[in-house]
Length: 218
Image 1 (cartoon, rainbow, N blue to C red):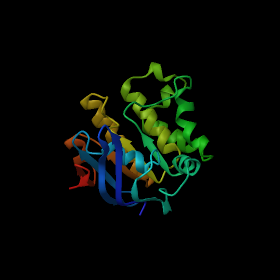
Image 2: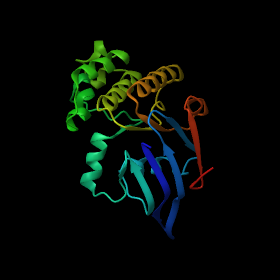
Image 3: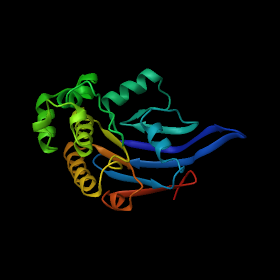
Image 4: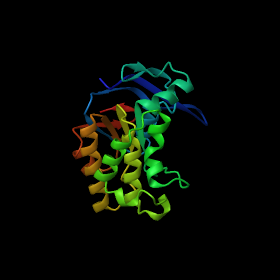
């Protein structure tokens, strides 16, 4: 399994004490699988994604990525895991405005010491970015910026891709096109994909679907 989440709990401080967000969540994801994570606002979707990505710590339970237990890692080891094995695609793109498209695409892979120029060229071509490599993010449309974010993540060849509403800022037609390209490229690279989405149509395009409600998988 690329990802194993076992009985994970997480609470956050509130005015009257700790507020439980995740209450014993378990799921798994194998190489090449795609999984949609849905749930109402406040159900813990983004919290779970952040825990899996090592951006926060669990209260209890365990998370294993690529055979490595991340819940016992220190901050430096979790950051190294994100560079090498886990790619994150955000709704807000998070491109570096002072870097060209080409440099943005290469950024994460270079940090991981895994940059492959030929692989980056193939991804750029597949995502329709070949003519935009010398431009800066501000010159691109929202759909083009999200394609750059996808290319940046996949250029590093992660074992696991985490996507948090990656097409939420795009119009319906552009979102459908970008999602299709992302799913195809994830399959080709053999990565596993866990996507948080509020869209039932997006969830239907994933191979599996998990719903969170009141901190539980239902």
